[in-house]
Amino acid sequence: MSVNVNSTTPARNIKLVVAYNGAGYHGWQRQADGVDTIQHLIEQSAGRLVGHPVAVNGASRTDAGVHALGQVANFFTINHSIPLRAMRRALNSLLPRDIAILSAEQVNDDFHASRCAVAKTYKYRIYVAPVRSVHLHNLVYHYWRWLDVEAMQDAARRLVGKHDFRGFTCSAEARRNTVRTIHHCEVYQSGDEIIVSITGNGFLYKMVRNIVGTLIEIGRGRWAPDRVDMILSSRNRDDAGPTAPAEGLYLVSVQYPDK
Image 1 (tube, rainbow, N blue to C red):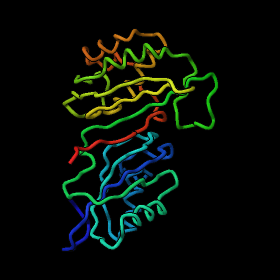
Image 2 (image 1 turned 120 degrees about the horizontal axis):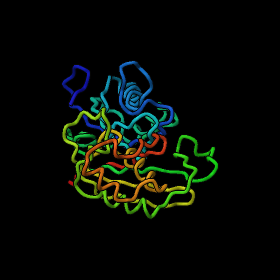
Image 3 (image 1 turned 30 degrees about the vertical axis):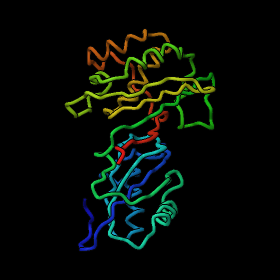
């Protein structure tokens, strides 16, 4: 816990659920060069509201262009005068229109948005039509060719379970442990969109987008569904498909232990 003020006043830990359109931002994480990020703007707004600097922790460091429906964040404040309902309204009045605080609640001091998370759910939206949708610009990945949804479903099921996902990450991944557990991975069609929904206990850098890129290659007939088995076995990124663009990806929700 860190509050950047000198005070003996007990701090309260505020948990936020945040939605945002990531198209205009350089991702979630604060950057040294001062470019607009979601974390930086929430810290600015929250600090202005409570009257002292705050450090905001996020559950997921979403990349530039990635969206969120249920990002979770927390920060500490010694300001006890602002009711939680008023805090949500006030933060929304200070933030840009493409960032929204969905809820604010006080939680135990040991809650940390990232370290306490036990699972995350992402979805990826693929717009499959000959002509792009201007109304969905930067909200979906436009893929103009037909995709075999059944083949993609077969491939997605092979990802469920505990595996080493080294083959689905990239060279920038610094973590040595690349074993993760996927609880659910589903592909389904909804109108002109093919949706990939995936829940796991954790995700490596660009792992979801690399999985989607591989599923698209399978859907267009380049590979059979058992290509997934080969990638998991080889642990070689070169065996997987290209990284799907950021604009189709959404952080849907973050799960925490029941207490």
